[in-house]
Length: 292
Image (cartoon, rainbow, N blue to C red; front, side, top):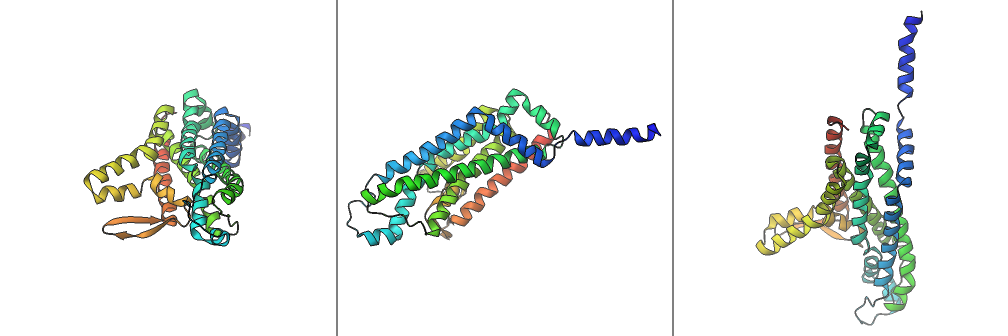
């Protein structure tokens, strides 16, 4: 009788020793908010997004052209200029999101904590995706809140310097804010999965920054020197160029002109999702095959 029940008890205890996905999410949330790098990186995203918005909004964005208050408030040009002022900081804060994304996973490899993480989830898939989910959601929320605060700070400055009033009922404006926060989260996730692939903080950060900043610059220079259309088309699908369309005011118009591909806001978002999916699949395959 005791012999027959022993395996069942062992199996029961073994199953209880592994965290559920909800437990993994709670664990990853605790680890994320307990890191000093998380606080400082998110604080910098807040400060830079708000600071750049205030700095640009304080300038005359109309170029000295005369424009009535009603025209400035309702015109697309005014809202486009306001959106540019509010979201300009994303060009810099995406660097911080990429650095933090790499550190979230490579830090555990550096300290050896990844062994404990994979012990709690022997299949490793739940731990990897749970960490990505927590980091992505928190980064999106921080990015969105910082852009909303930046908009509130920029509103009186735009009114006094450029006679531009932000129309808070404009859905296109809100779409740009949401797109900007989404770009920060997706860029951070790309860097996160690159970090899982490389398993080195320096390597993960270098790969993330290289893909986001260096590759588009190299392709742009090459296109300018050779007029190669293929290089221009490849550049259009890089994360920074495609993702940059996500936070423009009605940015981009999809089509092909003289062999050059152009993307719009929706396609830019899909390209970013594609980058996350591709790097994520590669990271999952390698994480499951390699030793911790």
